[in-house]
Image 1 (cartoon, rainbow, N blue to C red):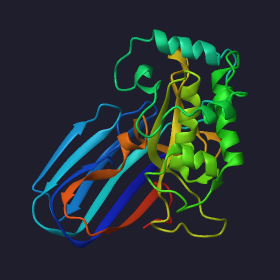
Image 2 (image 1 turned 45 degrees about the vertical axis):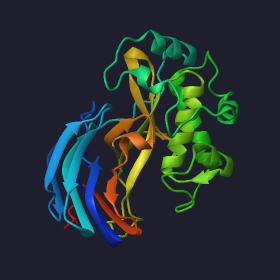
Image 3 (image 1 turned 90 degrees about the vertical axis):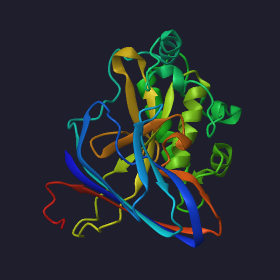
Image 4 (image 1 turned 30 degrees about the vertical axis):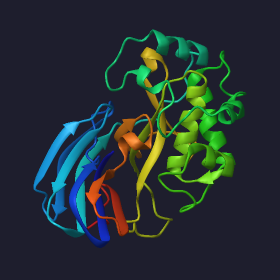
Length: 298
C-alpha cells in the first residue's frame, strides 16, 4: 500500500516569544517493511537555521532556530510512504516463549538504535509499576509464546480501557492513565510498554500514522486523521520487532505508518523545544493519510 501523508501544525502564541529552539520528529526513520520518499518540510516564518540528524533511537530530528519574535508558526511536513502488504506478522508455530525472549534480550550484544537492551528498563515516562505488572501477570507467564501473549495484552487493553479524547495530555503519568482506565493511544502504548518491561521483555514506543476509513458511503474528510502511537515488542533475533496496537487490539499492519521509535513518548514527540516567553499557546494539528490510489482525494 502506498500513501501520501501531510502533517500540518500551527501554533499561535498569546504573546510574542523569542529565541525559539524547536525539535521536530516528523520525518520517518528507516524501518523494515516500509519506504519513504519525497519528504518536504516547510516552516513559516523561515528558521535562521535547520539542522537535521538521526537521533539516539530510530528517529530523525530536525532542529530549528528562529531568532525573530514569533506570534505564530506554521509547520508543514509531507512525504510518500509504502508499506509492505500481506497479513500482519501474527503468532506463528514455534514462536519463542516469554522467558526465552527475556533471556535472548539479556544475551544480545546489539547496541544499535534498535538494539533490545535499550528498551528493557524504566524510562522517563514509563517507570516500572508493580500494579501494571500484576495486572498483566496471567498473560505474560514465562512459558507462553511471546507474540501470542503480547497480542492478548493489546486486546486486554482494548477491552478494559476507554478511549476518551482530551481526558489526558502528553504529561499524564502512566500510573494515572492505568488507574483511570481511560485515555488515548499514547496512554495505552505506555501501559503496554510498562507491562512488557516488567517481565523483562524489550518494549518500545512508536509514533506514526494510522490509516482511517470513513463510514460507508461517506467521503474522506481532509485533516481528519491524526498521529497514532503503538508499542513494539522484540520477539527474539529471528522474529525481531513486532508492532502491537493496544488502542485497536491488533498487530500493526499495512495501515500503520512508522515514523519513530523510542523508549517512550519523550523520545519521539513530534515537536518540542524551548523559547523565551510564556504567555500560553494554542496548537492546531491537521493530518491527512491518503492512499495514493484514492481517486477521491484532491
